Image (cartoon, rainbow over all chains, first blue to last red; front, side, top):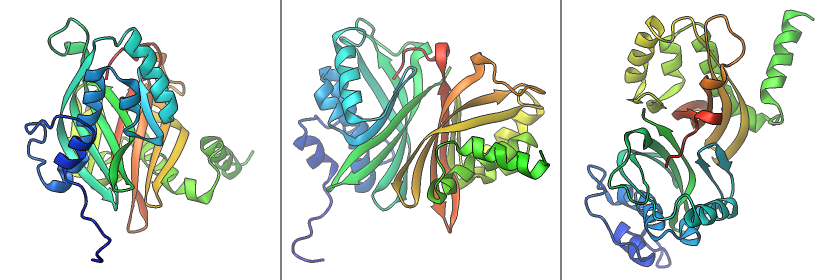
Length: 158
Length: 154
């Protein structure tokens, strides 16, 4: 290794950089440094929901990142930002999401996939409504030394 | 039209605007799965996946690995999926790297004897495909309701 190479960022460093409080219970059995770094992406996105902050939320996607929301297939960071900005002012106002990992796979150099279970908790609710329980696939990629979200889609469990 | 020309025409319809040889590589994965499903061939469906591939379907289905997928499909073809087909056309192909591609298709399950999808069964599918030893395989498949069945969720 040359002196200019830096080791990959650890989960705690990545989360601190983004001002996200690390949830040490989030990782479950996926607790290698590599898996934890990948799983900072769902934690960062959850924090975007908690903040109801569309700019922060969208910033964790790659520029051509994609997101399926209800029946709307969004295919760029800008579309995602606009959709979430509108949502946080209306139907997603006060909503947050929760989830936990079920699988983490490394697909190729700098490409990983996580499966999570969880769901959205709307304003005034205290838990995920049974009809809104989901499993999601997250494809994440390493860009400039940082894991970013390439694609997110959820499938209803019920 | 000859059977061969008809087959080529259907294949051209399937590829749509995704006509490059590079895109046709991962787009072969849904074709294999559709063909296996048409025969209600559980092992064939499972073999479309990587060894540790993941299948997620609405209805509380999460299967990890070819063996779980094969067992699930075997039971499904003896029960709820008996005689069904499946269809889908690509609407997006995105290469993450040369060996990882994300496909999106619109399609769904075809009731026995049907060639059109019941609107209630229409889905948006995402296929995470990887090239393993030169062969494109499914690292993950999931689908979600399309149209009016796509309720609010995250």
